[in-house]
Image 1 (spheres, rainbow, N blue to C red):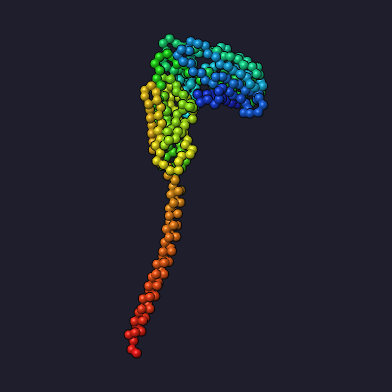
Image 2 (image 1 turned 60 degrees about the vertical axis):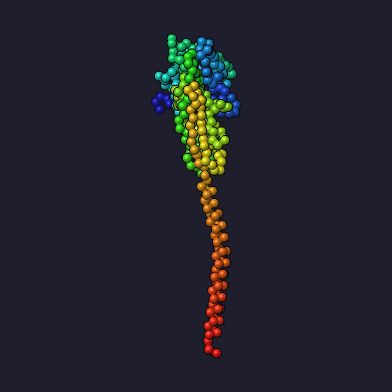
Length: 320
């Protein structure tokens, strides 16, 4: 085959849905240290207005058995409704041109670590509110033999807030369920959350987003909602009551007030209704059959008695 097939893997692009305290990418999931294992800490960086002029740092550690060449790059990104990071050259409110990174490339021996410094240099009179950029720690495919090459990348989002008014407003779409009428659990609640403010919002335990339903709190998974982004999330109510007319409500407060969505869910087990009907029918039949037998005996006795009386009258009227 002419040329080589190159496969690119982008791993652990964290956008606030933190898998762990640190972003990492490794060639093996468990067991002894793999040939390749790179860890970057922190997994994301939030820089407030008062910290814009201060240098920030990341720690890069090689926990594998092979040396690696690391290249640090910047990338604009947006986030889709599932929370997946999508790289776009002209993403809105990108801060990709604001960062100065040192060093931009380095070699790490096995077991070694290196600090990477990031300085933020916004343009004159930037739009107030939050801007974002992803810092990519890439280990390019080596130049050795083989037909498949792997580029390993860890993406760490950086949220930068320019001084100015802060708006944390969030707008909720309709709260939908598995169906307005269900026969039992589990029940899924689906909701679209829209960030209409000027900064990202974190919904992590213990301040995560929940559905309040008939005295129960059903939590949505932890997630981050970037500025201007929309996210569709689902909460699963694994053990709802046997039957109920359930009133479900979700509320989020922000600068612009509280956004609330509600819905009504009816849980009624049709299988239970079927068993109940069969049971009632069986009880009715069991109660009806003896009554029918008794009535049949009574009618038979009455007919027999009437027959004897008629016979006696006929015998008494005959000539002697």
